[in-house]
Amino acid sequence: MLSTLIEQGYGEPEDLNCAEKILYGANEVYQLGLTPQALRISSGFGGGMTIGSVCGALTAAIMVLGILFVKDRAHESDKIKILTQELFDTYQKQMGDIDCTPLKDHYRREDIKCKYVITKAAAALDTIIKKEQDSHQA
Image 1 (cartoon, rainbow, N blue to C red):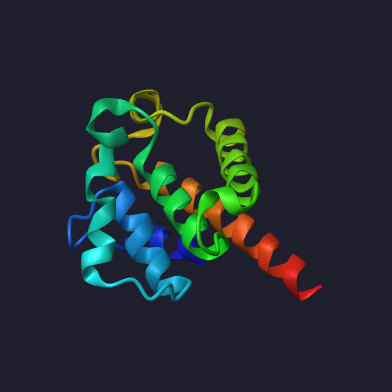
Image 2 (tube, helix red, strand yellow):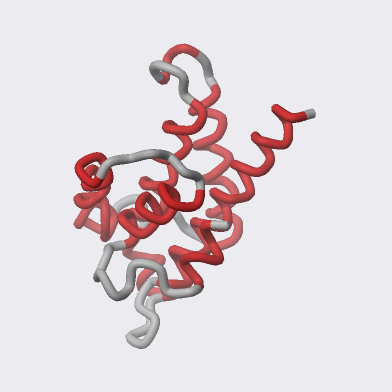
């Protein structure tokens, strides 16, 4: 699971930001097949897109949902909207916010930085992916 990978310190030696940790880690865990160039798309989303807006871990999680559950484009169905809303709702309930600045104020520590915040985003993503995969196998 992606959350386990993040808990184990994935991306820390490489100094990946929160969005990069989610996308690069999901690429490994969920075998997305993204190239190094494609992975770099997440680079500007760390730190709430550098302005403290929506958490970069969540924006990267949306990228993963799009890769896994959108066939050609978002407007082909409501699937990506529904899954994104589920991700935000779940995260908001667990963490109290979806924006970087308040999350950092509440959870960031110098020794672990935003590891807890990122792990929780990864866990919410893991749960949605597992549920979707299970519903397709049933």
